[in-house]
Image 1 (cartoon, rainbow, N blue to C red):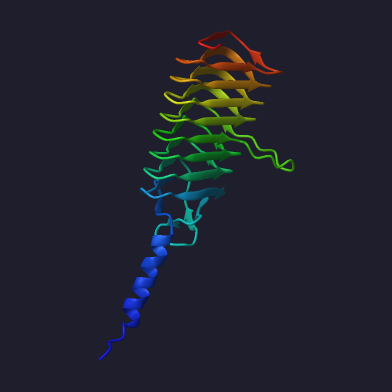
Image 2 (image 1 turned 90 degrees about the horizontal axis):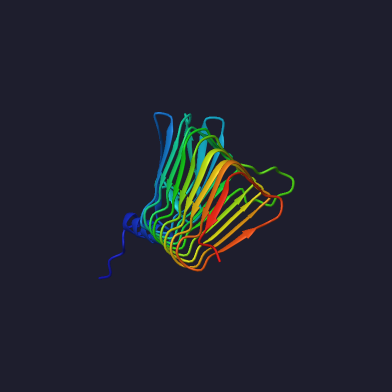
Amino acid sequence: MVRRRSSGRRCAFEFLEIRQMLAGDVTAQIRNGNLIIKGDSSDNVIAVTQSGTTITVTGTGTTVNSATTPAVLTGFTGSIKLKMKGGNDGVTLTGLTATELEAELGKGNDTLDIENCTVNGETELEGEKGDDTIKIDTNTDTETSVSSRFNDELDIDLGKGNDTLQMINATVTDETDIDTRRGTDAVTITGSTMTKLDTDLGKDDDTLSISTTTVSVKTELDGGKGTNTFTNGTGNSFTGLTQKNFA
């Protein structure tokens, strides 16, 4: 006698197969007006947008709050805390306004893309281990003015690995502090304005390229250990420029 698998067990099995095909699950919630997003050990890919006090978190091959549909969250008025943990993650933040931004990309080869956002307090971006890429305002759509504004300190720590930082048309009203640590790293800054700029490119052979950028108070550029290259492009205005450890 052949037993047929029950429809309930078959549906559960098929749902499990679908979940296994997806790249993990991200949890997103608003707590006391603050947006908190946490990834898992899989390769999470999400996009975060804002309309008024409503946040939408959309996964690409990734579930959000265990659902395949976007998570729509209301009541956002404060800060953003992003913790992605392991996996090769991709996060895009577009058109957000927050009181603070803290992003931990975790282990893996991760990408963080910040487009047309405003942060009115401190911003901390941390890459940790892996070959990470952080992009700020790299959208090339000529019909839309893409420019992010950081109304406090911008602290970027790319961590260990062969990392890339691209910053275009950003404004930072306080200090911009960029650390890349160990690995062959590339930092490019174009069309940006900041009060202070401090770079430490860490160990190994790194490149720093800056053009059409204004630093109004103090500019300290350190290539770190290794054979490093600094390209001082056209249109720069550096106040109090010091540079060391560049070939």
